[in-house]
Image 1 (cartoon, each protein chain N blue to C red):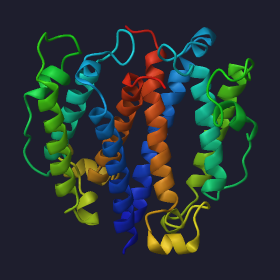
Image 2 (image 1 turned 120 degrees about the horizontal axis):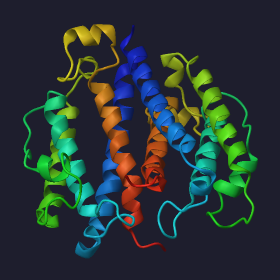
Image 3 (image 1 turned 45 degrees about the vertical axis):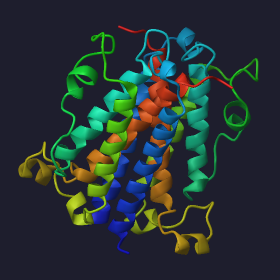
Image 4 (image 1 turned 90 degrees about the horizontal axis):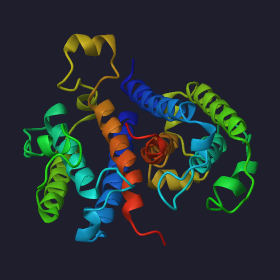
Length: 162
Length: 162
């Protein structure tokens, strides 16, 4: 295996682990817990579930891996804070979108060669990449893994303390 | 630049960004805020500061980059939960350890070649690495970046909501 392929495998392994932790957390919460804020006056779990799903759905075009499937989530979970809308999609639907989005993303990401991981992401021009070769797909992927971990740190607070 | 060097640069950039965000968060809190829990009944900021510092100090030997400097933090912030000890080191000292540890770690990490990033970490045997080549320094580094992001997600809750 080439060094760059090992590094890609490490990054994908790290992503999978983070997604798995978030998914088992979501799977372990009751409907009621999804409607509780993670701390007084902060985002509710349902909002973070929708937010993470929207961000991961956005990764598809950003990484050049395909079209978005859930543009409708942006208004609810990305461009407006929690509490803006009285009605949100049912948790069961959001959980399905979460799983489908992550499955699709992983499936497509696994097809990329190390060379493709180092190509620019679609929000960049070729000139930008020449100036800074680290602004590539790989960078977006590590950054979004961190983003999920960031919110996972908040989501664990929604669980009952043992 | 080789593909593997670009990937290392991406990983280091991501680490630096995460450390920078945590550091400016710590720098923006009052002494009093360090003693507040991030959510009712949860860890205090001072505990998370000590915890992250201990984990990063531990990265030095784990990555084969040198000896530990703050073994004394383990009992306070790693092997026991917050609230175990009535007295903790002053915040000003902990902040200094945090900055020193991260500076040292980055300085040493920047000296590693891509080949060295793919060598096993010191908690692994050579045989383990043959079985799974992704269990290397690079993997530890991405994992710990995530760990910092995880707690950063909690730390931002300590800031007054605007």
